[in-house]
Length: 273
Image 1 (cartoon, rainbow, N blue to C red):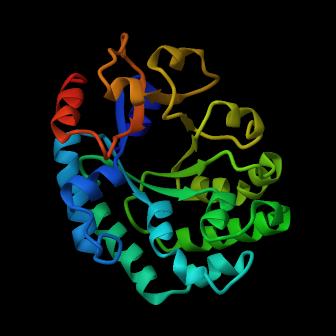
Image 2 (image 1 turned 30 degrees about the vertical axis):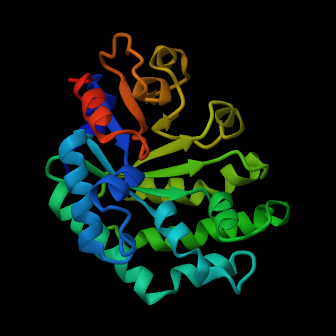
């Protein structure tokens, strides 16, 4: 493992972490219908995209993969939706092979991390009504996701990211349910990070300790105002030409737009060097 995230946390070095699943799929795979079913195509597409982007962290985005295969859960309810998804042999094989390829091809130069949607976000993606989601359902969902992750314990994985969205589900309940995922990350010596759709979510998840909080909408000037290690700065303002203030020793994080001219992406990435 490259250990770049740990170097940032321990030594204050600047870190560039881009989320680029949609960008890679659109620009480098031309939205190929087999993007989430052919693992070598997927891993190669991410690797090719990162030759342009130079992200020091590359994520396997379970959320994007699960959304593509949400039809597998169409006949189920509650946590059985997740079980139906995770029990599909073809989907399991894709995830195992794609993550294995990424880990072995990329982990010497970049940190490879696994990104999961929060239990509530996944349940809603699979068709569950937010009003039906209670602590027991969240707890069962988190347990199922933990079992999925155990299959990757032997790979050179650097971290686990949980992605939270604003969906009306009780954050206190969800944070408590996710402690099993936090504990699993610690057991495997993985970095544990929370990706938050907005800064407001941080208050509701304050009891769920994380090594880093990732806020893709945050301006770089606000990074120093956050409580604890935080990534952000590469938001829509940056991609549309906004200048970054001094970025020494910060964690620059954000989503690469899939709908922006690829030439503009190259220019904006070059401005980070």
